Length: 133
Ligand SMILES: [Zn+2]
Image (cartoon, rainbow, N blue to C red):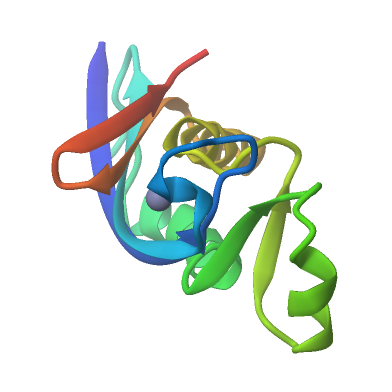
């Protein structure tokens, strides 16, 4: 089994509902995501997947969708306010925790045909959540 990993950095804002810690307030993170792709055999180029292709596919989606965006629970009462102000936000069915963001990025990478096996979302340099099915 071969595994390659692509790092992608992006910035996001969020807050958590039904949570008593300080993450209940609007704030932001400089996140690093690590996308692991795996293959039993290498392709004709000797690769699991070209790093440039991985970047093209998933970094483009992250840049267009999550970077410099407020990630919010769909039930967040701030949504109409941000909408009126023309702010950029992305709605999630659950709280926008590192765990749920990792799962979201996994799902988008998988849906775009990448042989993704795990996604790690570093919310801070010391805190990381991993999703793999
Ligand atoms: Zn946070």
